[in-house]
Length: 304
Image 1 (cartoon, rainbow, N blue to C red):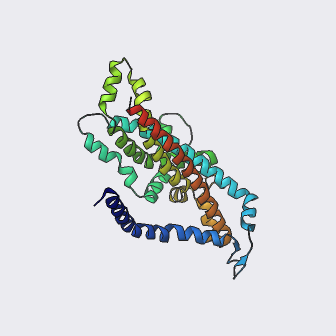
Image 2: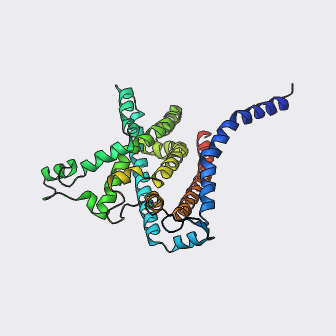
Image 3: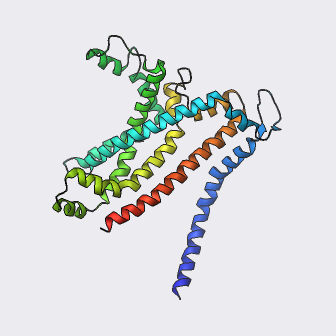
């Protein structure tokens, strides 16, 4: 049996094993998106129309002039960028600490992942009480330290409400980033650091010239996962602020929910879903391109 025959058989076996997964993805992912794309060309509002009416690109034209949509997109962008950047910075610090050898490292690694494992709705409810203007822990600490004279209405002020939900999201999801980065750190050979140290490099130089280049693929993958999750955030903000005050924390997913479930405007809601999906696809495409470049750069560092 030739090598080509074995390779073809392996490829055939691989495709046969992948068919159930592909069918599942087609059922739970491709079909809903395709259905939303189709319905986005119809005016389908159960509050005013019992039967859908074909309207072409009217829903997309409406979106261009929809101030609430652009505000929700701006809120989503601010929340996503701030959360992902903070999570990457803090997660990197935690990963570097957990990568060191010390007593009880296994137990601390287990404890560090607990916030990520807890239900988001439960965490959001806890943070709602933490930021409560009368009974919250945050205000109590600030009052005891003498930093404020009266309680701050964290969830009642637009800017403070956004800060509060970002802090809650960072607290919950940073462990996910740290575990991914820790796995990347453990794959870097210590020989590289030892050779670099013999050349007179400092710890900061080793981090900048070895750790970051070799860890960049994991950083980008973690950022990609978190970008997709943060961009579609719903439960955390729905529990903490409900999109308020005055729409200051309303994200695109909350706007879609209100459009479909409150106003029963399924056609316009479908258009919002399609646009959100396309934005995520664009982000994934850009990240994949950068990932391929960073992998090539990391391979060059390892070969030195």
